[in-house]
Length: 86
Image (cartoon, rainbow, N blue to C red):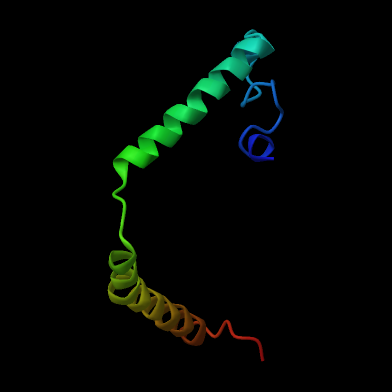
């Protein structure tokens, strides 16, 4: 199911351009199969691995204030421009 989500159309080209239609489906499948592990390895290497206590601290110190700021910002915009339903 992951391949269905990542590669809609299966062996078809990603974009509907005439130059892409000249490439055979087996080449498209091969390119997509090679690209998936490459992308996975790049993401794993680029982002640090957090320990449990680090991820909890990140959520408490960074993401909670950002979430609260977003709630305040969105509610302020809705009230300011009177976009709230009556």
